[in-house]
Image 1: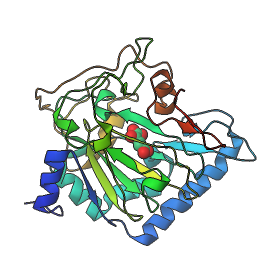
Image 2: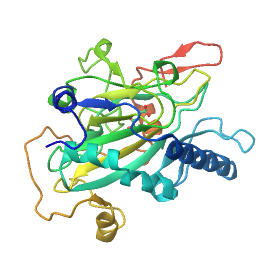
Image 3: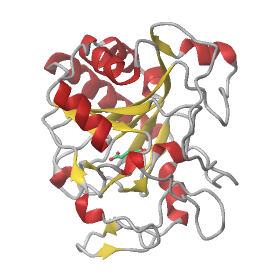
Image 4: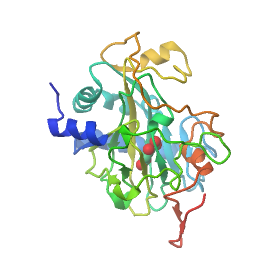
Length: 302
Ligand SMILES: O=C(O)CCC(=O)C(=O)O
């Protein structure tokens, strides 16, 4: 019996590889998360280059701080760990992945007004294949989100297809699909839109991406990458050892017998040159979304 998702929502996730739950998170908690984000952006004035917390937009300065991602927000600020205990988020995740769930990673993609960077088409599975594909990403919309401010697009049904090549012309993993060579029809993409507090879930093989935010409204998306506890990462258990891996159990209990299912796998090797930043990695691939410069011209090359 599902706890929170309706049969239609469960079918949609199974058939199309994504589902959006409108207004799941309450306003006071959202406000605390936006305040925490504002505090973190303020603190970024002290740094000049990417570090273990910040991925910076081009043009970042102490006077005009520009942050495109907070890395591992659940470690950086307690409110982003607290949210994982939200009953609605927990129930929806367990409906999709089962009782026992581990957090793989988290990230907060900021997409500031006027310049927030695009994210090229990709499948999360290409970054972190597991022994089985009960692997999802929950995207918590901290702001009202629409196509205008850079909503994430998904390509329905792609989770049932292949894992696409995510390598650049140098032969290294670049974290982006070549939009000309993959044969996908991007016109069928759907935007995950909703009022602040809505949460999208997309399967790890669902192709997704998003355009630059050229509106005057922010679009912050807090992503939790979540796996069934019996899905074990194929590449690396943890950079920090077993205790850290174990501490990422968020619901239920651990399982030491990995469930292995046939699934299309390509390893992200040879590794990307810029480990830790999808934005930098993707500059090695062909662009679909590109950037719009201050004169409103779209650049399709990196
Ligand atoms: O921020 C977005 O719109 C997409 C994010 C994403 O797909 C990612 O960071 O892997």
